[in-house]
Length: 145
Figure (cartoon, rainbow, N blue to C red):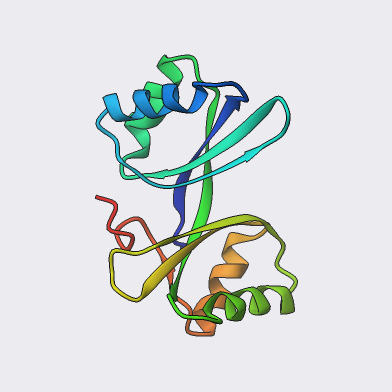
């Protein structure tokens, strides 16, 4: 079974105060944000979050009228050194695994980073990465609890 992480994807209006409203809702629900990415257009954005407890965050956001979905992503553990990301990207490209988007964050473990990938085929990518000695993390590995 592929180790995946639940990512929250939240539709955000592109106006002042939108992000603070979402952060307030999540904070009030007792959930901690661990990683985030925001992609926008002129009118709206998609806020992608990795949180320590997705279920209560999802419930709180929906109760407050947010449009939110859960997406399965994989987290790849890499060394926080020059060239580590390139190795992973080259491997995925060589095997024609399409990356829809990605973002990264530094780990609490000294010397490590994690790259979140939304891929066309999580299972194929995870197997390929494992075969090449590249760790795919799960929620517990990320120390999100």
